[in-house]
Image 1 (cartoon, rainbow, N blue to C red):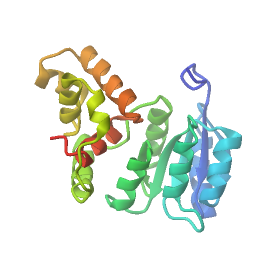
Image 2 (spheres, one colour):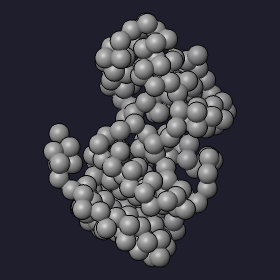
Image 3 (cartoon, rainbow, N blue to C red):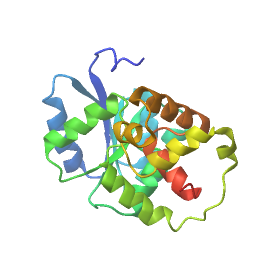
Image 4 (spheres, one colour):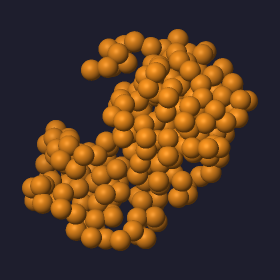
Length: 221
């Protein structure tokens, strides 16, 4: 259990090449008693270093920055094993950048022109370890759009799943909630949570959106 889950202030870092954007977001965050800004960076390399030194609970990471961009930084941060949850910042709506960010292990994405209150909600949800911050319908449309172009080959990792776990993965890939999965498979929500947790552990994935991407790319239908 991390400090955030114990009730400590949420430690947030901001990485964006535009100082005005960083300053605006900082103002929003510093007005909240349960959030502490622990650092800023102006490029991807700085963001990776910031995570290593400041160990924020949540990193707001711009997609497009000079030098190492946000996508490469997100991959490095996730690969490092850091517990920091990465939320990508973008001026674009649904596009390949967002898909690649989720594929890299980001917890979700935020549009820079979102209301401040929505940004705060996203940060708090990410800090609690919630699933990727995309509505199920949006997730499904995004994944289907870009995963359809990926080569579909059976993954050796599927052999480690039970028949029921593959069934849960198949339904999960459609963007259904735990309650919807439970209703469709006629099992309890508690059982669904157990199956989802096992699927993520066995496949080495961080959240259910990564699992949905894996399922589509592996041709699990």
